[in-house]
Image (cartoon, rainbow, N blue to C red; front, side, top):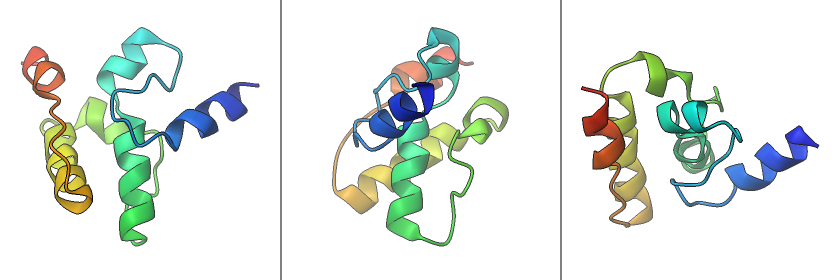
Length: 85
């Protein structure tokens, strides 16, 4: 059931989607961003749980910039990025 839940929400294209059903994990990682970049680039972003967002400073912000550029959107995660400081 959990695999179906996460797989369904990973394909939402909405970077604010709650995927893990855990507020702490959903705050620290944005797997929809990584998963979408995985589909768009096909040569990178194989780790679908976006662990680097929680570990590497600035990676979520950089991934969001690339996400916006490739999809021609203007989503912002400033609240999430700034709150980590």
